[in-house]
Image 1 (cartoon, helix red, strand yellow):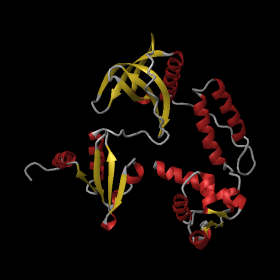
Image 2 (spheres, helix red, strand yellow):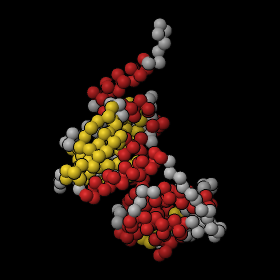
Image 3 (tube, rainbow, N blue to C red):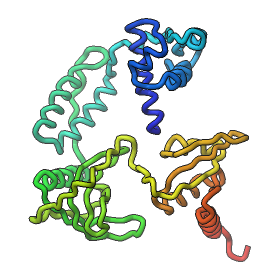
Image 4 (cartoon, rainbow, N blue to C red):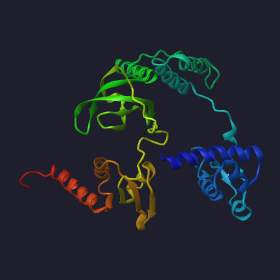
Amino acid sequence: MSAGAKEQVGRLLALVPLIQREGDMRLEDAARRLGVPPEQLVADLRVLIYCGWPGWMPGDLIEVDLDALDGDSVIRIHNADYLGTPLRLSAAEASAITVALRTLRESADGDTLDSLDRALAKIETVAEDGQQAAHVEVRVPPGQREGAALRTRLAAALSSGRQVRLTYYVPARDENTERTVDPMALVDSQGMAYLQAWCHVANGRRLFRLDRIVADETLDSAAEPHPDVEPVDLADGLFRPEPDNPLVTLRLAPQARWVAEYYPVEAVRERRGGKLEIDLRVADSRWLMRLLLRLSPYAEVLRPAEYAEAFTAAAQETLSLYRVPGA
């Protein structure tokens, strides 16, 4: 889900209970309460009419009085009472969450451990039918235990302000690299764990995936301070383009329109036949080539010319692998 889509879901989840609680509301008042422009709220409401219970029949969807919205700038919502109902967990859902929490518990300590234990105590005794959920015993695979231990060691180095020597696997070059880093933060994004650190080999901030760290050693030397380098917030995704990254324009067929939602783009333009033109910044040309080969034949590079030529060459090289000699 793109950052824009996540923000829209958040606005709708705040707007509907607000209208249910306070009744019909003028558009300007609701926009001020939510801190967004009125025109953005109008766009959100035109999406809301397609939301509701699975089944997607007219009686299942949330109703927005568009006449009141367009004519009097009044927000009036019906058929959304279920959003005010407290959420309940089924036995299967409770068990799944219990497994996840017990897995996290393997590497937790201090306040985190206390919080996990309190959550587990509540979830294990509550299910949708009010019966006690079955006790779940979690056996963490060795590889996962090693990952938890690695994270614990890195967290200790981070809190004590010490450098770490890493042996790190780089898949693009299929080789292990040795480097000394100053840990800055441990973060999670899209289901993966990362160490943000200042790398003395690259002389810059880098992200290291924990599952690609082959070996680690916490050193006695103190980590150097980097006051001008802030850890990156990965809440909106792993890739955060920089203004100086090359700007690339792609034309996407309908089958590849999802790219505009999945990746951060700077501009989107509708074209005939359901096609899109998008502008996005590219930090790594190899990543772009892999993406384009996945999308082929539903994407093409319009500019800059060197990227279009590189993609043509990559596509021809790929096709040559499938040619039968002598054919």
